Length: 193
Image (cartoon, rainbow, N blue to C red):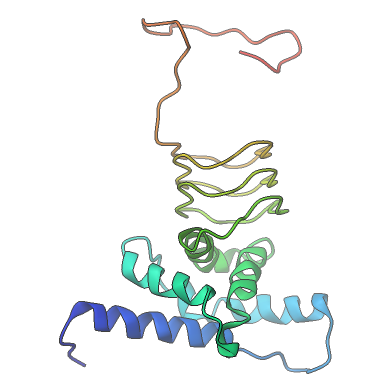
């Protein structure tokens, strides 16, 4: 196919990704949360959103993010499915690209991700700049290369999380100290530097 403008291509790519996610149906119609999530996790690695990290495709991310607030009945489960993709990464490492894309899209849509139990999720490379993550638990999560520039992280738990190359967008500094830091010491209780 050839497109008149790149934005047309990005729009159709976003639509394909969206419809792939929202059109998935479980094998059994009457199932509760746990069996539904298990079936979803099994299929999640086949979604198109799991093929490529979308971080460089800002327009595709935004087209998908805009549909989260579309009042059309067709898109009502998009937001919950994106959250399910993140949950799926807890038990299936092959879904990490989809989970990172889902987190990035939810953040682009300015959806609050506060007070989530995201222990053991794998959202490496997600863009969570300016994200609302207050009280979210990331215990034992894989957060390598995640961007958290100016994110709201009050009471966020990073215990035993993998945070290689995590980016908060600024370097740490000590108030009132203008020279190089050559050593630090922890308080006896281990809570302060």
